[in-house]
Length: 182
Image (cartoon, rainbow, N blue to C red; front, side, top):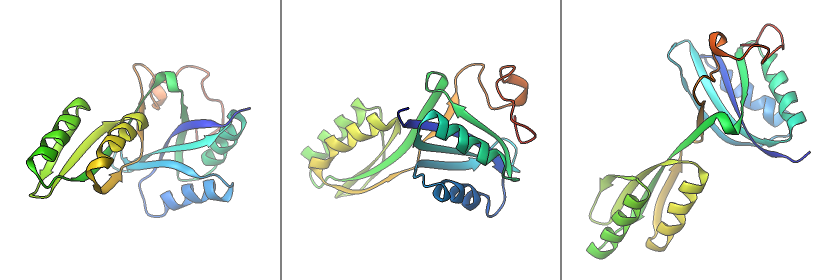
């Protein structure tokens, strides 16, 4: 099987050390986490981790089952690409030391529906939200102006429509893995 980029949604206890346990599981199995984003959910005692990893179907199954065995993990779901909305926030600080450059950068930002979030005499800072291809495209265009700094949040993802990680809305028969399941 071919390894592809997979997105995992993991609900965990919101407490110290949980993220390092999850990350150690991946590194211990020899997998590189391509993207990682963590934040609390609507329930303050629960955090949601979005992990992207390159693996084939068999490896993703193994990783998902290993994650489910961790005491701190409430649920794990592999998000199917056709049902997922994936987004990342990228902040880019670009050199803009004259009026002409500044106008060109603003036009590029507008084309990508990005926001100018800071202006100084010598730079502009842009915020862009989208998938990898959007982030890479605007980054490539802005390189010629001189990127001073760039930071990416990591991908976050939710399923579209009726699909959720929640027990009440999951499809029947979707998971049959044991106690640490949806």
